[in-house]
Length: 159
Image 1 (spheres, rainbow, N blue to C red):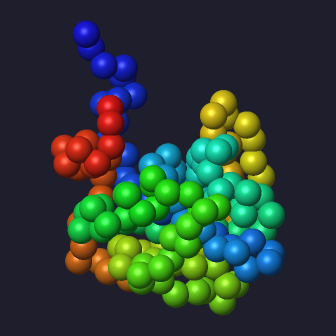
Image 2: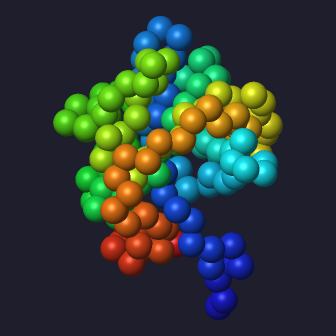
Image 3: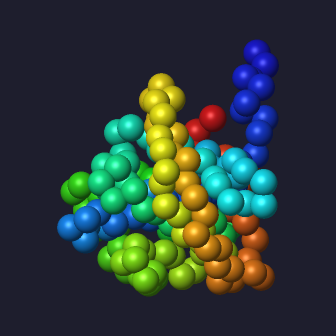
């Protein structure tokens, strides 16, 4: 049996970090992030509707998109991708800092994009957030980008 065409795509792996208006923070794992305007002025982020991150993003309409490094995979996939921020503090023993908006970013990531959400739309089991890019910061340019193919090869995701 041939796999579905979209399974051939090799997506970069990100962590979406956010903060609520009351200061609650969370982080998740996301692969569906794409530039959606020329010169990187806007990006679109797909967030799973069941994820705690989406609740916080809808409240504050701010987030950071952290481009993850391959070396972060074995630590972050179980911590950020398989646990809920509703019941655990994902930031314990996780190197991070806060930007000037009070939104966390991961200091060991390759870098992050600081965003303000300007709109959202239903997309089945996910919701798409169109985000204005406020700034892009490269933190660790020497690191290799984590991809979905790498996660599959290491048995860290299915499919």
